[in-house]
Length: 253
Image (cartoon, rainbow, N blue to C red; front, side):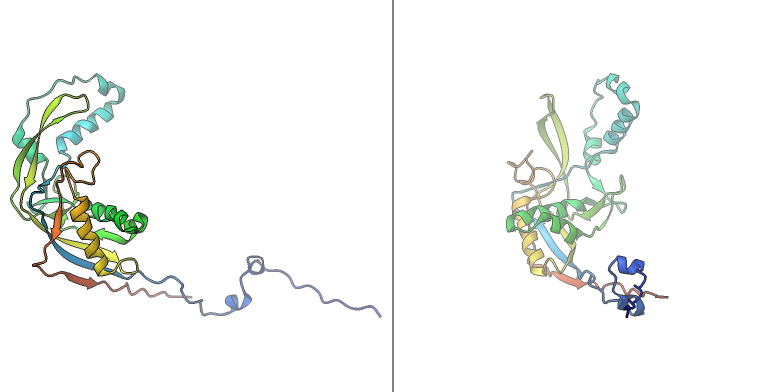
C-alpha cells in the first residue's frame, strides 16, 4: 500500500526571516531590552586657582568676516594686499571677549566639557563614552555668534602678550584676563556611566591638571604656561537633580 505523504506547508516571509509564529500571532509586543538613560544635572561651584589666570580668546567678528571674504574670492583672495591696518587695541580686547546677549562675560561652555572628557584619560575611562555621557548646561548665548556660554563672575583686565605668528614675526596680542574668578557649572550626565562622586572627582582632575581656555596645561601649544586651572569651591553647596525619563505613550493598532 502506497504511503500518502503530508503536503508540505507553504513557507511564509516570517519563516524565512526566522520570526517565531507566536510572536506574530500574539498582540502583546516583546518586552523592551533598551532602558531609558538615567540622566541627572549636578551644579558645582568652581573658582580659579591662585597664580593661574583665566585668559579667554573669542574668534572676532572681524576675523570671521575677513576669512569669509577670502573664501568667497577663492584663488583671487591670495592676491589681496597683506598690508596691515592700524590696530585698535581697545577694539581687539572687546572682540576677544565672549559677551552674552544679557551683557555679561563668559567662556565657551564646550571648554569645561572638553577638559572633563580629556581628564577621562587620567583615570582609564574611555573618552568615547565620556563624550556620549557628559554635557555642559549653558548659562546663556553669545551675542556675537551664538556660542553657548558659562558665566564668569569677576572683573576682566586687558592683558598684552608678545607672540610670534606663523612667519616668525613678533606681534602683540591683547586678551581679557581674570586673576580672580568664579563660575557655577551645571553638568548633565548619564548615571549609568558616572556617579555624582565620579563627576566631582573628574571635574577636580580637569581643573587641577587639564585647565581651560588659553595657556592651559592640556594644550600642546601652551602647556608651559599653566593658565586656566581651577578648583571646586567647597564653601558652596553642590546640588544634584535627577531628571525623570520622558513619559512616552505608544498607541498600537
